[in-house]
Length: 125
Image (tube, rainbow, N blue to C red):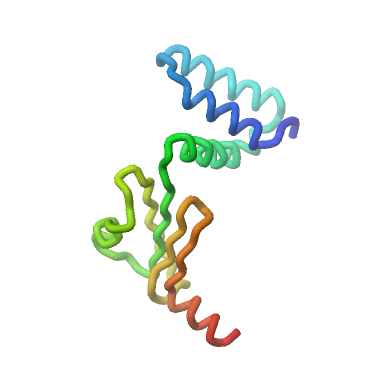
């Protein structure tokens, strides 16, 4: 590992946020991947993309919202519409371990855990 993933992510974030035409963008992205390959850091690609996504979210003012439920819920985005903003990137996850209730994570940081599992764990701890 020649460079940390955050450094690559900052560079890729600047590249992605730039006002480029399609030809320039393609060339720069190709060069970026060649540098990663040359430095033998391809194993960091997933981490680089995750960090880049965070950087771009901050720059654009968007939020990443993950809503976890124990089972599939119809019209989940509609039910949480009062909480969500149009620009939010919403990910719905099914997590049977929750038993019941909902768990909401905003920008991988803020979390509301209204699951039955958390309540049971809290009761017996």
